[in-house]
Length: 224
Length: 224
DNA sequence: TGAAGAAGTGAACAACTATTCAGACCGAAA
DNA sequence: TTTCGGTCTGAATAGTTGTTCACTTCTTCA
Image 1 (cartoon, each protein chain N blue to C red):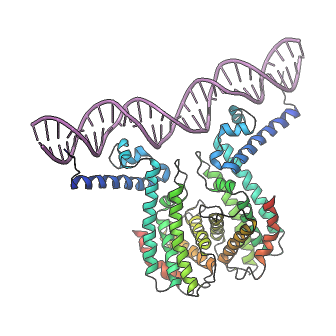
Image 2: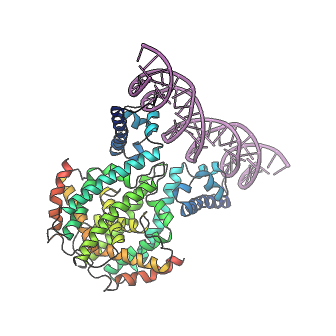
Image 3: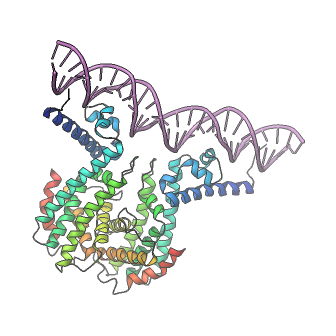
């Protein structure tokens, strides 16, 4: 009398799991990580608190998966943008711009994923998230160096610094306030991208059209 | 029958207050903000838990003062270093280097002050801390711009980005690991300072001796 | 249709710490 | 030395949330 999960049940279970994860993501996007509490998330997902624990062994695990998921999406977007660029320098510019735009369009989520205080230990998945994205940027810098567009440098450190600059300038507590205005937002993205590119040795990004060019396609994402 | 505090008592009270604050600072330097809990801090300060509340209305207030104090010290050091420099560009370099060195020599404390999760709300004092230090850097950038050494730019945003880069690269979770080795540490400080200066438009900081020059006096601080 | 096992429920529990407060202790004035 | 307000103490309190578990509901299969 073996009980076997019907295909339908398997699907329902998967859907429920993903509903819980989505609920957590929505909560984080709304109110930051502080809003990711088991009871409220359960309500959003239309399940009971106990049910969450049938899918995730602990809150730490839930948040870790949330971070991993967001991070995965981010990485995909970065790669897509960079791969579409015509050369290594503009690929780097596109990657940086993509991050800037994403981060700005979901500021609370970004802050939550990156740095917001959480009451459980999620350092491991935050570390992984940073490592993945920083690694991607480092690779793009490396490409530009190899192509002779940038001076040789410690690319890993440069990538990390670049991300730190982006995040602090765009979602940190000192970030400019009126970024809801699309024009200002584009300005901020441009300015910060320019700073970042100059830091790694790009000399005249604006003149060469790297920044503006990279900004244009990404701009659409803000509306979405 | 007016009870008046003797001068001696006043002094003892002040000493005790400062002992509590120091204990909190030590705890933070040892184990980050997580270690700043009322009971352990009280033990370090040789008082009972309740006594802490005769000096600080809440844990939030205690930590806020801690942040303000560290921030004040930091600002003083930055100003001293910058004011001792011969010109605006090297003043900027000196300021940046000073921050880098300080942050590295007290990594846990820096991380705690800046970004570590805390269970009480200290956003206001963190914001103030950032604003003060970022403001100082912005002013130094401004000086260099006015002197014609740097291109015109949004100095506030640049300063914020610069600090973000410093922090992420030096105390963030992706910071290089073997910074206990003094040589590596100096390398990291140099590299990151260079990046930061390039970002704001300094073209050949290393060639012009800005970075090395600024590093040398600050190096002594690491030992202290 | 019914038996057996899986999944879902939500109120109760547990653990962690900031905070309180009634009483002990200390120091200043008489 | 006595009195009395200020100061200190630390065990008890309180509030917050993650987590559990006895029970209900649903699903599979004979």
